Image 1 (cartoon, protein in one colour):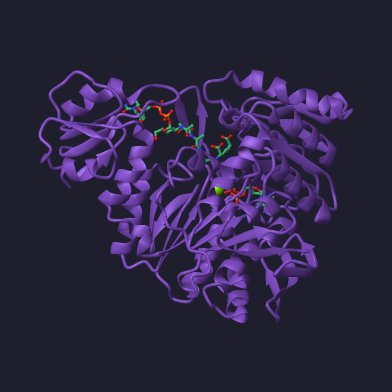
Image 2 (tube, helix red, strand yellow):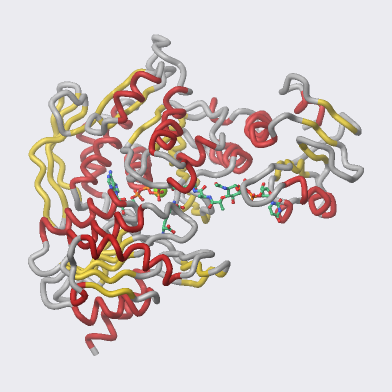
Length: 495
Ligand SMILES: CC(=O)N[C@H]1[C@@H](OP(=O)(O)OP(=O)(O)OC[C@H]2O[C@@H](n3ccc(=O)[nH]c3=O)[C@H](O)[C@@H]2O)O[C@H](CO)[C@@H](O)[C@@H]1O[C@H](C)C(=O)N[C@@H](C)C(=O)N[C@H](CCC(=O)O)C(=O)O
Ligand SMILES: Nc1ncnc2c1ncn2[C@@H]1O[C@H](COP(=O)(O)OP(=O)(O)OP(=O)(O)O)[C@@H](O)[C@H]1O
Ligand SMILES: N[C@H](CCC[C@H](N)C(=O)O)C(=O)O
Ligand SMILES: [Mg+2]
């Protein structure tokens, strides 16, 4: 694409240098620039992309997008807001891929990965071709790619939607994080469906207040378009959790058709007669005059909500309820979400990605339903993330466990022990005596300790890292997988 074509996307954009300069790719990180790329200089939270313009030029960038002049001979496109320009340019450069496929987005504090995985599973069962983007990975058909972010930067996102289309995708299912909404990563995407799971505390480091966090998610619904075109294939849908109080506001924000799901009588897609065991969940779903009984292998009431979200979004696609039910019954586990490890020991070890107060509460409430012994909880809180959730998670762990081991969960640039000490007051506040909890900064030691102390019928919950294959300490990524470490500990103990 030529620089002048990109300039025409903006009112008042100015070019310096040759307007006919051709760019063959888009990049926002100088370390990833390839010859011919357009390098966008984005003022960030940590550094300023304008400072890396020279590096980008060295790597072969053909032109720059800048907010202010920078030294160097490369042709430049001057824009008011480079981050906003990234989405606009990426959509045009990849020729608006979301207009050619059905794009289903899932937002909410918890349940995005699970719900989007369920949706993809159901669609694939119906032989649709799909792409999936989210926290665990990106999938195009059967091919898996590593994911750096839950929601990719606009330049990668548009590129990958195009790749999905090239691979024949009918649908793309993606997680839409509040960061992505706030930072405009999904600007220009035409969503067929926007699904909301729930809103509880997280990410206050970034959004500052719950009101602003809620408003960031609201952007997903206020931007959703194509209301009541008369053609259901052209209509956009907002699927809202009727049991979450933010939904009523989101319903008001959107011009799309609203469908609700939940446990109450007013929900359009509703679950009743829920029964839970350590091996799965049974419930009856009623939707638009139809009913089905579903027995899922996924445990926990929260997974009934995730299933209802997936059912709603696939019913819209005219997949018959019995077929949806059949697919859901065959989902075995979403990696790192309530995943059991070492099935043959007489105690149970569960690895779960609960890293928010509500996620931890839901995981512990679920386990309490079937645990016949003690609950031993191993968890921590991420460094350089919402600090205010630390004592809250400490309280929740203390209130719902019999023994708590506080440990590290990606301390990043923070001192591991300092994070543990910010969690501890929450535990103390619940009156847990020193015999019922301890702080062990080394996560491997913490997991080993939990396994060593387990008695028959106890359940160990290892929360916070789920599928993650690394522990980030300082700037260093150490290989670390809760599931493998727990297996090692279990094997070591039985020797
Ligand atoms: C708050 C946030 O999302 N920040 C993201 C944002 O950072 P930023 O704009 O501040 O970038 P910066 O580091 O200041 O750098 C500015 C610019 O200089 C560029 N640069 C920087 C260094 C260099 O050597 N060369 C270079 O070109 C950067 O690529 C960037 O374009 O753009 C960066 C480049 O894409 C991201 O790596 C960074 O993610 C940070 C690391 C992050 O941790 N983000 C998390 C919180 C996040 O986005 N999480 C949500 C999910 C949460 C959930 O699932 O609940 C997500 O969607 O993943
Ligand atoms: N619907 C739900 N309501 C509350 N908690 C949930 C729900 N679904 C999952 N959880 C809890 O949250 C954890 C994370 O689930 P999941 O990965 O599906 O969420 P996510 O929204 O994708 O998270 P992230 O923001 O990190 O990408 C699970 O391991 C579980 O403990
Ligand atoms: N997507 C979330 C994941 C947090 C997972 C937890 N293990 C941590 O590192 O805090 C985030 O980036 O905030
Ligand atoms: Mg996720």
